[in-house]
Image (cartoon, rainbow, N blue to C red; front, side):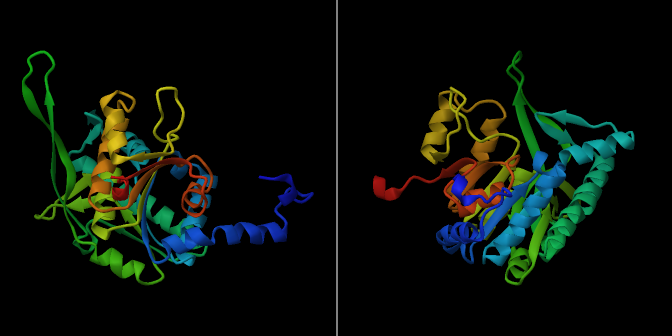
Length: 309
């Protein structure tokens, strides 16, 4: 930031505060009355100062005419409580194997303590947040998630039983639409139920993507603990089309655990959401930087401009 914008105490002068606000106007107009789904988790959730800044960002979005919808994770907190309760937790193919005892803990943590902590922080910053889960208003009907893997030795495909782990089958966004039409801010725990009413644990990124698609959101922001998508030299790639992202997967630039995240993003964009941003949640006020300035802090993935042929 230019030194002439900062006074002797290290704060912005009143004149330059007004200048910063006026420069944000075009971005505020772009997102006016638009829905933005924000998946919140990782380090940003565990750090008190980042959590406070995140809550301020969400309140400012709502006050600026944007309709923010927060979907949160909570993997580390679930793991910590399971350990305290001496409940053994296993993972298969990167997903928590969730038996009936474990799913009760998952729901207690996600729809209970974590959800209400986020709600309280947003309310403390002047917002009016309401905590719900995918079970409220039948927001998220899920089916049991099946993970198929091929044994590298025998080349035989097998199905891994993940227990009470779900994937979205039907999204009914009515309850979220009713909340966002008012001055309320939905904070959604990624817990759903199947048609029989059994609780299912849903990956937060997957849940947020399905909800953003159903809401036809302007943006889906995925707050993570990485900068974004990096090139082969380790530099951040600020923007990708869906076609470019697929090329980077094919040539190995996008690899490992980033592949399923990017593939999920591609599905969301191709389902009608204008763009998905993989955002560095460790950066203070990352949400505002991404939406209200031209200095993004992650990788934006969008459909190619059809006019470009």
